[in-house]
Length: 372
View 1 (cartoon, rainbow, N blue to C red):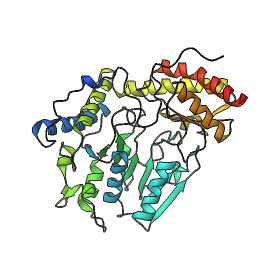
View 2 (cartoon, helix red, strand yellow):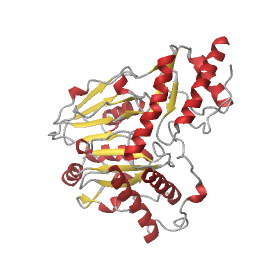
View 3 (cartoon, rainbow, N blue to C red):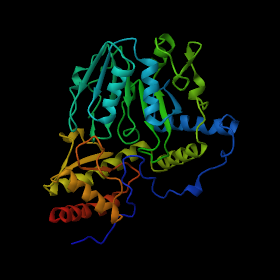
View 4 (cartoon, rainbow, N blue to C red):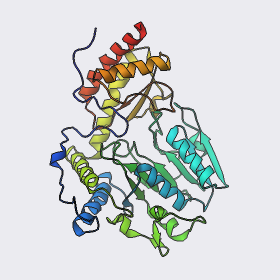
């Protein structure tokens, strides 16, 4: 029978993701609007975004946090164009965005000494092949495949190369071993449900040392420049952004950070995301027509949960349309390059009771499509 209880919040998109529970745009501090981002009030807000991020994530001493242009993509491109080329590169890709970094490194930067390790959707490449003397580029969580690295045991603590990690759908939702990560990028619109167009760039002291002692041989666009006169441009990590940011988006991000802190910090947002994943795990275990795309339980994402169905791609499309038209779940179709299925966001801005309300509707929509 058709379920009667609907999710209070049907926003299960994997990016931009659902706003935090209780979000109200009218409660944002809008005192920076209409002011220059370089005025004391604007710079203070941007500096607070950097400092509070470092505080909540409990970054090691010496790690720097900056707000940069063009979302997580901009942060990753900035890191790769500024840091790569000094030594060989190992790049791991197992879904759309990770494979994009592979293409950029090989086709755009045209580096000679590149070793690519790839895997199909649902699997991880052999991470043990990472060479500690090479620079390493990888995603922590494959947003389009629902496959994450289970830990950082495969990263050598005594490495001489840098680790560059795209962690946009992992930061604030998964344990991050910061000491093994030299560059980490993420965007506000993922785990925190913030607004788009801005990226966050986290640099370790080792990454800063590389920047100050290595100059890439290619021209560097202005929005990628992290150094000035051979030294790190510290202003980027103290509230002086390269380009003009949206102060409304900054106010929204600071509101999200307030929510994380009031919720009990990152430990609680991680726990909530894992609890949300458990709702889907119970459902999948009880139904033989739905499956995790991730081939191993320890690599299942607890944010962008990807599922396959015993349906044709056309039937999956019908199912997601039904869920959308009923106002049950918006934007839950798999990524365009991934196998046909569902992708349900389980980050901490999603409430467990909404996922629990969604599950019977998945059964109903599946039956509707099967019966045709």
